[in-house]
Length: 211
Image (cartoon, rainbow, N blue to C red; front, top):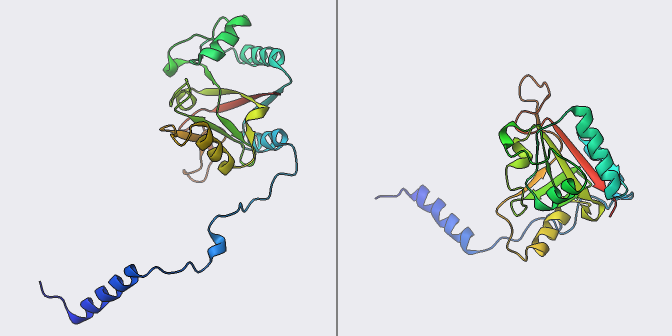
């Protein structure tokens, strides 16, 4: 195959460039530090503000008893009868507090699904979940309403903090899926009109317990 002199000249320049590393023009811009300043307020408050701005529904509970009371009120006011819950710890808590409709086992036709989470990201109002949880990959996506039970000890400021916690928790053997759910599913692709509940739950609740 004949190569023209001009093309051969270009290839020589490419080979030379690949054999010699080029210093970064802006070495201080490679993510060594966060572009976001640390939060100056309580992480729970910041999460609640971000989360509700994104149309999430936030409920703060001082203890486990208040969680039960608030959760029962929300379920009763919405007349949810088919409650899907796969996680054994949550199922035990619900059973101990006289919930009688938490064991509905058809995710595709449930009214709501209840899960825990890995962490809550205050800066973005995001719920962090992973495939390592008993609820698996699909619960928080397929249910029309997602209820997340979390604790103040699970609050982190930024996404990078959640990822660092994941590396430490799983000793580098990360779960096959880590997802950041930021409010109800929504899109404005069609004529820039916001539609909620397109590719996931129409409503997302976070019950945050002080612990």
